[in-house]
Length: 240
Image (cartoon, rainbow, N blue to C red; front, side, top):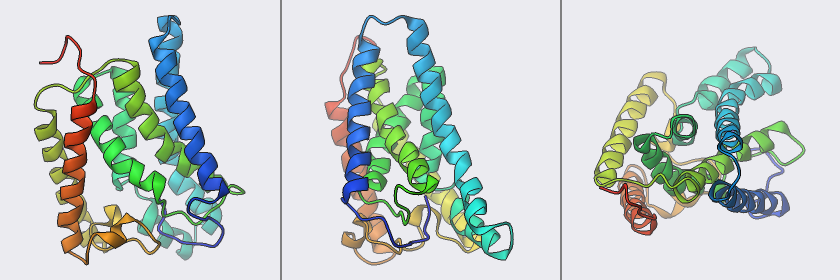
């Protein structure tokens, strides 16, 4: 997730709407596929390919930064400013990938709640300065679209449902993420997770109050979304 804002990308412009449409269609298709009578081998390949693509997108962020800015002072500054895998979207991409690989319900519940309550915000109001004539555009939406798709596929497609206590566990993981990244931000003087200040470009953070009070608003919204997402999640015989 880059904090470098450049001309070209327009929120809810054509390239944004195309990315949103592909995400919705991808989620619908993969849920139907996982519920179909397709062989377990094919479904396994789908899980591993999607998980691999999520990890690939995270790894490509610093690579694309160096390709665009070089390996000189500017390239390294951009790398430290925005390309370390410390945003929530980066972390949940890895979590979702391993949830797809292992089908662990504890990883699934984190991927489900962080992916739909958190990464979706980045999908709707991306801090993106590159349009679809750049690799950065495709990598951004591969990650930010792939995570919600994985979350929906895991829960509605594969039937790995959140278990009792999921809300409490994911709240604790959320606080742990915030604490760790805030410490790292203080040490390296950066703003990963937008925990030390709002993004430079327009986003939902603009409606949450000033720093540091928007962090409280952010948690209220996030935890409320967790509650709603758990209420609408399907529950099977393995719910306990």
